Image 1: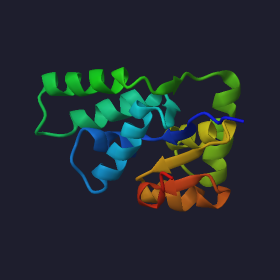
Image 2 (image 1 turned 30 degrees about the horizontal axis):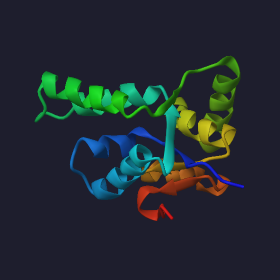
Image 3 (image 1 turned 135 degrees about the horizontal axis):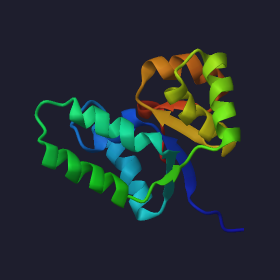
Length: 145
């Protein structure tokens, strides 16, 4: 039986590293490149686009044109961006309360749970609050075997 590519949920803390040189950017780029090469499927709530745009907008060294180019590049990656549904938002609210995280962060957790995937994050606070559910890995813990 042939298996398809592994699905990984990534959050904005990982995706931002594709455009801004930060600690662990090479690891984040390997995830992105795995998606481009077909060995991984990256998935995220559609919130990812707005969170990345917000992070890039907050970076004083980037022009508006550079931000637009980066967001265009993000969209061209063809990540599976999931739009909210009533059931999904209900899961987000439940997980937000259970893990004591924002609904924004919970959207990534709920998606990973709903798709039986792993959430890869560079957000230590999110990881520490949600790691007990077994689906959250820090970027530096992820082994792309």
